[in-house]
Amino acid sequence: MADNAKTYGAKGGKARAKKLTAEKKSAIARAGALVRWAKAGISNLLFAKYGAPDRPLRIGDIEIPAYVLADGTRVLAQSGLHAGIGLSEGGGKDGSRKIVELMRRIAEKGIDTRGLIVRANSPIRFIPPWGGKPAHGYEATILPDICHVLIEAGQRGILGKRSEHLAERAAKLQLGFATVGIIALVDEATGYQDYRSRDALALILEKFVAKELRPWVKTFPAEYYKQIFRLNDWPYAENRGRPGVVGHWTNNIVYKRLAPGVLEELKKQTPRYPSGDFKHKLFQRLTEDFGHPKLREHLTGVIMLMKYSPNWRVFMSRLDREYPQWGNTMMLPFPEDYAAPEVPGDTD
Image 1 (tube, rainbow, N blue to C red):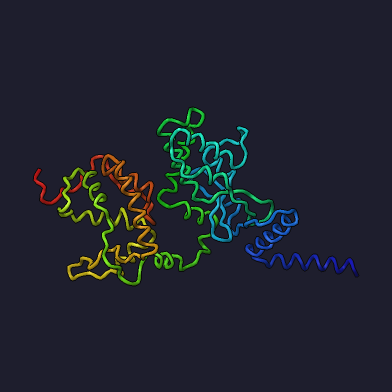
Image 2: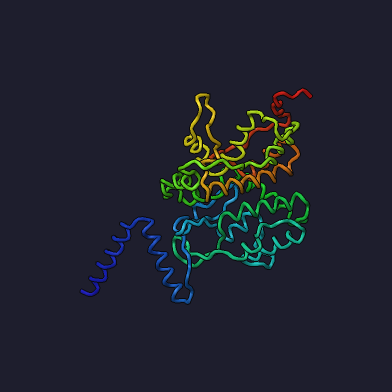
């Protein structure tokens, strides 16, 4: 009787297991792993809800295991990140120290490493969706910064012969995620995009777009327009009118790159005159505590890119790389022989 009870119990357990969804099975595996590691004296572990070995982040022929933690943090596996950017398995450095040592060498050459030394030295420890041993990883947004630093180091010729391939690898990665965004790629790779809240876009717009019109305050600095004129080789005068195309360019350079759907929502919320012109400036609809600060932050970065660009074509190329448009899958075409429109009234 006892043997029969065991047999029926085992069969019943298998039958119940078959009825469980994949998500429920993962949750049970994670819970079991947490208990095991807690008994071993390891606590406060995070756990990943999404991601699988057969669904890595793919950029060209480069694959990096990716996960989404329970709190929504997108994570790249540490070892996969090392391989993805071209760091060898050997060399006597383990774990986070590989990237830390690399960034220290680059920083000694005078390149801004964007806080990567500290960030790489603090990996995230988490339990994979299927349970098992704790893994180490980094927040996914570290990858674009690593690529930026490696590309700059390569351009300045300070990586050395043995590490030149790192800049080439970084350029390949950057090309893959520049116009889509690393977060979107991780969400697609892990399947998390299917579980994101449907009102995510509404929440973004609520943060950026105010329900009431803000009073007009000078927001776009004169330097922004001075640089547009310089890059297009136009003569600049402080009180002179600007070509209408500058407004269209501003939509592209600024509003389309703040957050998804922001430009469309600002246009929808801003009334127009019968002529079709807006009655107010679009930035008057940005929220005081979030939208407006984000606009100022973006303008600071844009003006910096402008100052270090020799002409309009180069600036737009750099802009698409550093601040890609939301939802855009291609860089804007600016051929070598691009000619900017003439300033109305110019005679010289």
